[in-house]
Length: 164
Picture: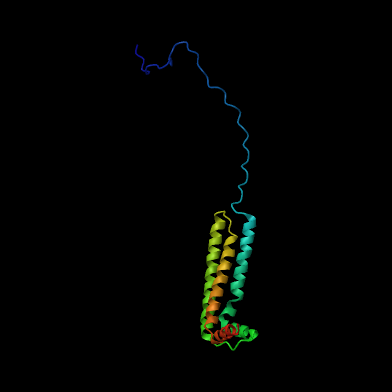
């Protein structure tokens, strides 16, 4: 009598061994609905960032023509201050164009960086503030470069220094 079964291990085929049944399965636990995932963005930051970006877009768009006619703006400012006539219109026109280009570029970069931070769930309200500060610095530097090179302004500064 040959048994084709493999050799028993640890009493697998022992005669008269009680058969061990699997323990009964516990009753299934009720499935709780998954909680809604939290939004990945901070609503307050999103509102503030959007408002600041809209102010930037409005500022660039509304002052576009003003900076294209930057020479006339400086002429009015010189007349208001009682200075001699402003004469550097060509330089002011070129600088006004660069003011518009730089402000638009800073705005685009600010919008892109803000959107990237918002999409990653990070705080982004500071980006439009930094962009606005950078735009103001660029405007001041470019405006000063025109005024310092105008003969009327140079004459005014020379007279002021001599009086003191």
